[in-house]
Length: 401
Image 1 (cartoon, rainbow, N blue to C red):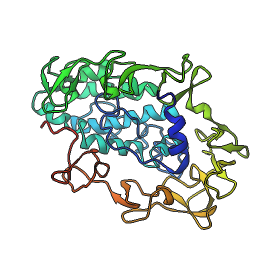
Image 2: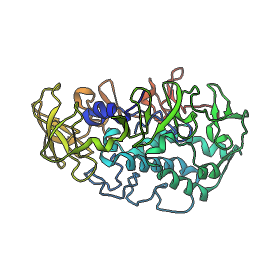
Image 3: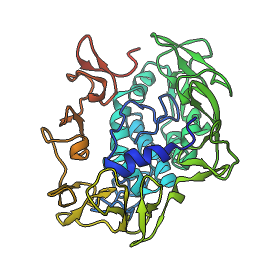
Image 4: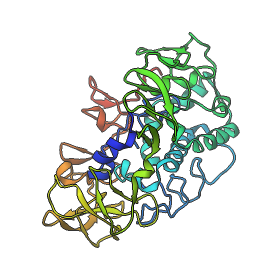
């Protein structure tokens, strides 16, 4: 069972050498995608720190809203809906685990930028087409309320299907058992099921039912090992062998505990990543666990503050450098903060996932992500997460258009 969303992912990804962000969750888990939560600092301040000293909305614009980035609190045009939803989901995720952990979970790429690119290239990017073809009735004013409600979900974003405000703002016109192209085409809380086009509008799956994605399950449930199961809130009683705690929490001592409790050691205190003795990097100085030596298998260290751009750094987990840089090691332990690599730069496990935003590490080389219609040779290269292997081009995950 997935009893610790970040307990394993944090140690191997967030607190180690970065994450290879999955681009395929083209719905963010709230409506119609894989809900995997693969997600920058998201603090919106545009500075060198990921400690969240900006507006906290995760959209990187510094305006403090959870909408489409235009600073408007009124209507949301249908063409801005995907970007607004990306912003709102990142606000929820940051509220759940904190700005610094969210930044590192996304391998230092901006959460909202990553999700917006995936949404635009996937199903949510086709909402405007469904509106134009009368498969959806869209309310621009209601969409603002929808996005505000999504931004307020916090840790429950993964187990929540479209809030009532979203169902009212993006009204699908297809009844249960009717043809559909995307989930939003369906009335109410239904989703578009099927591997072929068109799909079929289907009621969400109840507790214990078979599933492939969390978004197929009813609200309050997630898909775990092919079955819809309850997502337990923080402080709920749990069995680590059978229960699933909510996103951002884990089952410890018979209770679901927030991952924030893992990040507690103060500056100068001992830390050990594999033993889950972790530094407080949720607020303030965003402490990192500075390694005591260059032995990769030795996870012990000391909690130390992050450093500024261009300054000396040491091997630490997470990296001591600002988001846009990484610690280039000279001798296996000591180094200097340098700019993250762009196209053609070296990357990979040995290079500590050093690609800049907008690039992916493929075959140990930083490579630009591809939009729909651009060449590809594997799914990971595409913003949409789907490479048509017959034509070798990126395409939306669903082609029911």
